[in-house]
Length: 341
Image 1: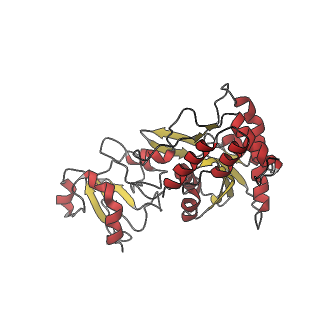
Image 2 (image 1 turned 45 degrees about the vertical axis):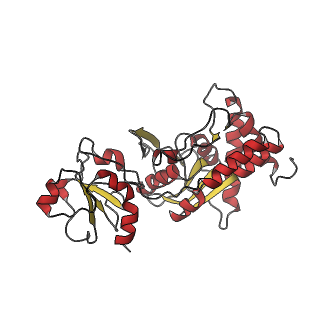
Image 3 (image 1 turned 60 degrees about the vertical axis):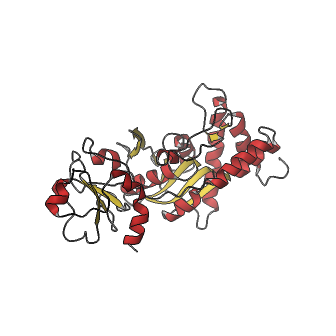
């Protein structure tokens, strides 16, 4: 066992496999994370955790790595009080799918307990689509599995996709907590983040085992400390050339939905809503098509932020949007904090 590190033999082997499989990368940076999709001006990371593609150097170690991770995640589940014994297991596509498969094997219901969602990225937006053939019941407790969790942006999007499918998702299991706000962000969303390692522990192992040097470790740790990300709600630009639900159906971080039963409606007016929306109960921002301007019972307190119909609905409905320019939406959170106080 490597001296000075509080690892079990299996944890030490997992850490070693991370390095020999080239899943810890300092060579090709700097790197972007999923949080950069919402905040492209954030500093880039000096290192990245990513499993190599099939056939790439180091990929021959992945079967052993994934198997040991599945064993370790199962033990983490069993060690909780009460033990976590999920009816379903779902890995965040695509990196965590083999990890979820290995965890699911520990339960008698395998492979029926394994749910494989699909990830679709279009025009910078991330959407998770439920499996077409899998059978599950509303309220099934589901273990959500991630590989590497930084701020938890994609993990939160995926969690809400699981919840929309009617599943109960109290826990997020991850291999590495990158210590950039993921624990707090997931807790604020009502779940626990349980990880095998923190990234600091993995970096410390790399130094002791002479896979990386102390300077590389210190640089990566300093980046993590300086870049703590809070996942809130962000306005994503939309216009009348795209349909709203195509982009927003599964995105709890952004504008949320159009209160219609069909997919072909475009957005005209952006509102702030303290109550959430039909398709996304967690949203703070909603874009609505003009045919269904928010009115009536259940929508008290909604505030028009921006009219992107060149003022048509402002004049017709007597709206008084808070913002006159689309770019002003970037600062909506400060304004709403005062309005909803």
